[in-house]
Amino acid sequence: MKVVFIGVSHWHLDLYMAPFLDVPDVELVGISDPDPEVVRALSARFKCEGDTDFKRLCRKLKPDFVFALGRHIDMPGEAEFLITERIPFAIEKPCGLTRRDVARIAEQADRAGVFAAVPLVFRNGDFTDHLLRQKAREDFHYMSFRFIAGFPARYRAAGCAWMLDPALSGGGSTINLAVHFFDLALRLLGPDLRVLGATMGNTAWHEAIEDYSIVTLERKGALCVIETGYLYPAPTSSFDMHYAFRSPSHYVIAHGPQTVESLGNDGQSETWQSITTNVPHYRTFVFDVLERARAGEKPLATLSDMVPIMGLIEDAYAKAGRQAFHMPGTNQGNANSG
Image (cartoon, rainbow, N blue to C red):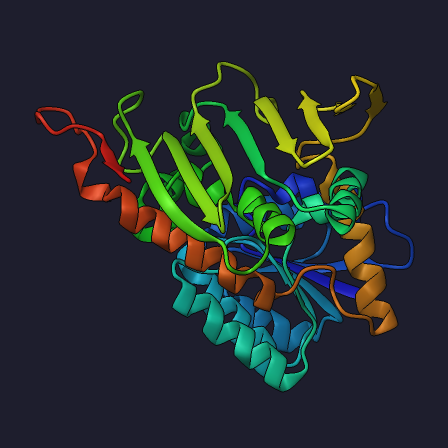
């Protein structure tokens, strides 16, 4: 199975590449990135072909599968090319800057019958399976997600300063981190979910993107709060995190990255180990997505699954009003709306 990686200057590259190199019966035949120095270094490191033009590289190598990374603004163009060439692929979130971007490429992929996966990697874990089994028995009343990552300067250090420009990335922690929790909320509360309110700010770092965000979602009285940010003084892939879920009979809590507790109304408690952060699931995703593509099966999450997620993200930014961010030398306050 010949595989190409494009947009390889993306900071998530190692989350894909490290497990990929352990997958049997696959071969990395090429990498591409607009930065020629990145191409030179990584093609030498991985002993494969490299090109700054991903279209030329793919037409030459005719890969069986592509992992598409890169800038968010470039993702729809990457997807459109791969769909036209009928090359199976997995494309990083958020797959574009707007719901319209994602809806367009999702419709194209569906019409062409091209395998187009999205790494909504919480779907690859047993914690999500537990929540879905709980939902099958009874609905949820409330849920909350707190997921605070490291400082945004890490993107500059990784050579991805474009992440701090909303014209290229679409925004900050809401579009980048909260995407996973919008997906979980839709799966647990259903498609009638709407954005009730959103508050975002950039007071910590004064970047053009938000470094803190709270979004409240609602469906027939059921509420979900998603809190994300770039505030935690810790290395990449470490998070200040806590999730909680209330159903009629249980209260489920994720105590950090590995421990889940379920408390019944009768006071009985059950605790078990489960991966509740995104990072370890990328390994599972890489193995799973390649096996599904090889077997001709559907991806666990598709471009079509991203469309309602992007709709909620777009609504959240509209509610918050990015123009109200506090910038150096101004007296503007943080954005908020209810």
